[in-house]
Length: 365
Length: 197
Image (cartoon, rainbow over all chains, first blue to last red; front, side, top):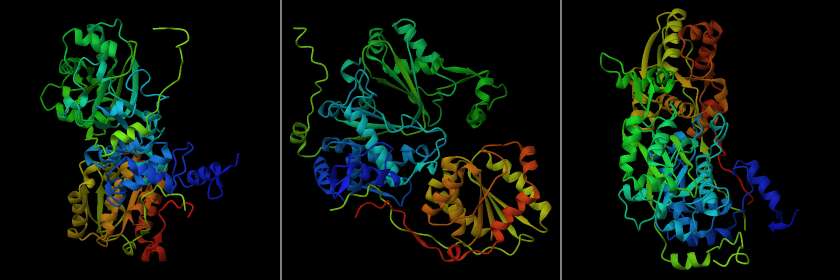
């Protein structure tokens, strides 16, 4: 194939050029043209030269125009721009620690969680298969923000991004909280936002563990949350660990009268590892020094001394599978998503239906 | 109409490095610990070896609590102040053996070069390209020397065994070898991702 798509160049030629210059994530891109930029910028009221923050170091500004350019390449729609603008601010917030976790040998992912009405406005998946593959906003929002970081901070694998293995989730850990099926207040409400506000939250975890309870009952769900806290899953200091609770398990916990705080407290109070196992973890040396101030050393150590460092999200679809994502050295940072004045027209124009399976000829209910 | 550039970089003006010294005998040497775990044992061993090898040498140490300290402009400025107030003749920094610590070690070494003190950063060999790209981004063609031990080794005996006279001579060479023309004058490098114009 060599169809001319821009200025005498084929899609393959354009992709080869951007790839060779290190400006992609290895996947094909949508060529960023001026026409597409004009269209993408309809998704924000901010001027194109507005600087959203600096990524990598203070000399690398990310403007609205550059963010939109990366959004085009990632396959975003203009309706994704408000989310991307808020996400870029989160990345640029020093509290996100993105400068470190973007380049660390451990290999951390940008974990994005969406809350509020924006999830439905742009069709963010919160239920089955939320982390994908398959859902455009969930895939392209993470990709766009990842490309924006990479291309602003100018990091490349093996050259400033020194992740030993890389991280398969790095640009693709995006989902909305399943607020509609949760027995608890949404995450952003816990963080002080109103339920009708929309937010995006950034964390920087390295691992994703799924597990199922012995029985889908509150007792066993709580025990499972503790049992699957690997010694590496430390939620001490600035580290957080994210427990993703599926709706069926969340329902059981809610029916048992357990609030999110109750669940956090239980997991915090029961997640311990033997001292000798903990002490072998090189990164825990300093932590050990801090908590072993007394004459009698502790025989076991808490993985999550502060319940607040355990974050609970109700997310995903049918089944009794839960997950632990962490440890996170990023943020968490939550940013409010501001909508442009033309939001109603935009969402109407770019609304996409999912007509994936047509069962109407077989079932009449 | 051209395709758009997704990067935000611009041309980088590389600064000229501080003049090198004529030798290490009798000099005031700064040892900079960037807060990474292996930095302290490497510098402890190095200090002993330097004292044995060079006559009348004076050592001044500056240690950060964590590698992240220099992200704070005040703590980064404290590195320059230390080099200045101690009237260092040369500085050796450790250690670049992970992604963020290598990046932030270049920040520390650049802060020392800024006040006219020649530096060399000690890095694991696997982080050579990482060092180079971060140094260029920072605006300094900073010199480096590869450590003889792998990332995060903290075993004093092993470090001492590997820090041979040849290894010390290589560090000395980075602090004494005359600068090239580019290292002296700096240069402009294209840090952008060119696209079809």
